[in-house]
Structures are given as structure tokens and as C-alpha cells.
Image (cartoon, rainbow, N blue to C red; front, top):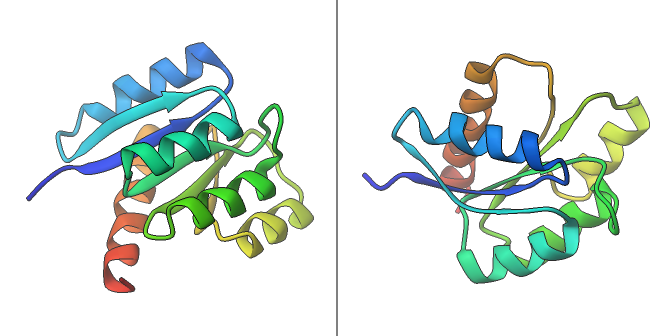
Length: 128
């Protein structure tokens, strides 16, 4: 079976690079692209055809909900997961309403993030 193709959309270069290294470790996930903002994320999603987009909720340019909606429009087959250091209930509602499947806290252990990617991919495959 082919690896789960993941696109990272994160403005913090160090965190983005760290995520890329961590997600590539299990072997069943392949990071196919890593970009710094929502506009670049939408373009990369169209070009790279990821299965899952893992994006920061607070991005320069487009906010989390607008980026999630644009990503879903550009690549409806892809599951969108938002990462955040903190989010209000209104933030959670807005991003889920925009099409994200989950909002995951950045402080969670790596194993939880990897499982969120796997789960989002499985759910997207079941509903395809």
C-alpha cells in the first residue's frame, strides 16, 4: 500500500521542518510538500494532490477557516487537519464548518498527531 501523502502548511519554519521529520518516520506517511502560508498551501494542494493537509490554524494571509475552505475547494478528496497552540470554541466551530476534519493542539504527543493523520486518511477513503 502506498504511503499517506501529507502536505504541511505552517508558517514557523522550525516547527514545519520538525513536523516533516517526525511524520516521515513511521514509513506509512510521506510529506509531499511543506509551505509557509495559506495561499501557497492551496496552490500546493492543487499541484501535489495530498491525501491529508496538516495546517496551522493561524497563518499569515488567510486565516484558518478561510484556508481550510480554500483547500477543500482545491482538493476535495483531501482531509484537512488544523493545528493550533490554542483555540476557542468559536475557532473550532468555524474551522470544522469550513471543512476541516479536526483541530489538534500542537502540544499533543507526536504519536497522537500521526494517529490523527492516519484516522483522517481512513475516514476520507471510506467517504470517497
